[in-house]
Every structure is written in C-alpha cells, then in structure tokens.
Image 1 (spheres, rainbow, N blue to C red):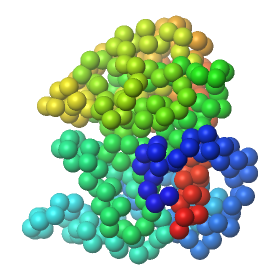
Image 2 (image 1 turned 180 degrees about the vertical axis):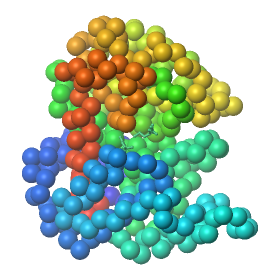
Image 3 (image 1 turned 45 degrees about the horizontal axis):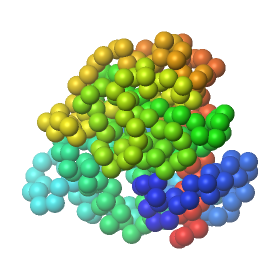
Image 4 (image 1 turned 90 degrees about the vertical axis):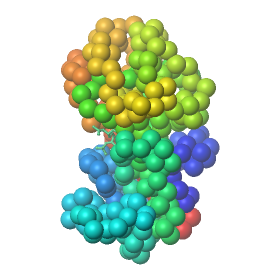
Length: 320
Ligand code: AN0
Ligand code: CP
C-alpha cells in the first residue's frame, strides 16, 4: 500500500478485519518487520488519540518514530506556489515535503480543512503534495476531507460489538459551538457504505455531506425516526459542507440543542451502543448520562485506533 486515504485502499474489508483481529490478539507478532525503518508523523493540527495510537502501532512493529508538530518549532510554511515570500512564512511546502521524505520510510500527515476555499479542501491540496513530493508512502491522519484510521477503527469496533448479522448504524449530526471539519462523517459514511450494515445518516437541513461520501446511504431528517431500532449511534458534529448552500461552507448554521444525544434519543433505539471518535464536548454532543452509560463504547473505540494504524503500517512496510 502506497497511500491510505479511502476505504478502497484497504481492499477486501473482511480480510482487513481478520488481519486486525489477528494483530489485536498478538500485537508484537511482527515486531521485526519495522526494524531500522522510520515512521514520520506530521501534525498541522492538535491530536491526542492519533498521535499516541499511531506511535504505539509503529512501535509494536519495531519501527522508529519521529513526530513533528509543524506549528510548534518548525518554520512557518507557505503552501501556495507563486507567492512572493516576504511575509511571516520562512519555508515553502515544496522544499519542506521532500526534505521530510529524506528522513523516513513512511509518512503520516494530519492537516485539517481550513474552510477558506471549498475546492482546495475537497481537492486535498496539501495531502496530494505529500503524495507527489515526499517520495514515500503516505497515510492520512485526518486530512481536509477524510479520517480513514478513525473509520477503520470504528468498523473494527462495530464488528466486535454487533449483536446481529446486519446491524442498523446511524450517523447523527449533533450541536457544537465551533465549526468542525467534515472529515470524520465523510469517512464514516464511506466505510459504512462499503461494510455490510444498514446505514442511515441524520442531520438538520443544510448539513448534507458531499455526494461522493453519502453514496447510497439513506438520509433521514427526522432524528428520532432515524434512531428507531438502531444498534449503533455514531454522533458527530460537522460544519456546513456547502453542498446545498456553497456560501455557508465551513459555517455553523444550526445550534438546535434538541439534536444532542440524550436518554430520550437512546430510548427509541434497539438498546444501541453509543460511539464518538472523541474528543467530545459533553452536554453539547452527548449528555453525561449517555456517555457514562454501559452502552457507551467510546473508550474501546479509541483503543482500536492502535489496531487500525497497525494494519495500515504493516501493509505499507510489507510493500516497501
Ligand atoms: C476534530 C474534527 O472534528 O475533525 C478532530 C476529530 C478527530 N475535532 C475537533 O477539532 C474538536
Ligand atoms: N479521534 C481522533 O482522531 O482524536 P485526536 O484528534 O485526538 O487524534
């Protein structure tokens, strides 16, 4: 594997899940595979889980790991070509990327949507430059539009907890004070569409996700109706994707607190498990009672981030 961005990059999902459970059973089985190989993790944005779980996964495989927080200690980077660099940016991405590639064998990059220009975000302008100029395999650690390591971990978690062959999985928008990216719901939709689940998306009008990610999923604007009989509730806030209203791209257009997942919502489900990628704002996205209930699986979900990262790194190492 040279790029990990979309669900298609992982190939057969049953095979990927099998590999994930094998690694979870014995995570040091391939501890020689990464000997003398270096994994470089580049963060343009904050992280707790991705930073720790990916580092751990690389170490399980015997790799060396270097982590760089670009905005803390590195030079401020220019990303646009053709700019006269007389401002506060000391280095251009076009030099920085191939230099980073010199010091590693595999690169992971986190670079969120900036919401300045929908086209730049949705064309994955930054990550595509890493793919093009680093000369190394690149895995996405949440880009402008996708967060595949999260969705793979979510799929592993659903497979572990499902109580019937084809569970009903509901992705629900929930309120949040700040504008958040669409990467998590985009990827989650993409992966759920590829998996064998009954998938429903619910959100207020105006929050329609990009059609390339929605695919054939059912969209239900009545949240309570969507929750009926659900086996898994996957809550997440996202800002306006700008599909139906381009001028609102990246904006908060609804603050309706009735969308917060609480006991009233969970009561109409099939005793559903509650999931969220974290970090989560309590009593905005989800009530204390729901996230603290026995049905909340947010911690095992986060734990599976180590496993999804390890499958991806193992495959990249194998193909070096
Ligand atoms: C980010 C987001 O919503 O995409 C990261 C989630 C994994 N969340 C925040 O910025 C709070
Ligand atoms: N879920 C997730 O990616 O968390 P971090 O932003 O803390 O890495």
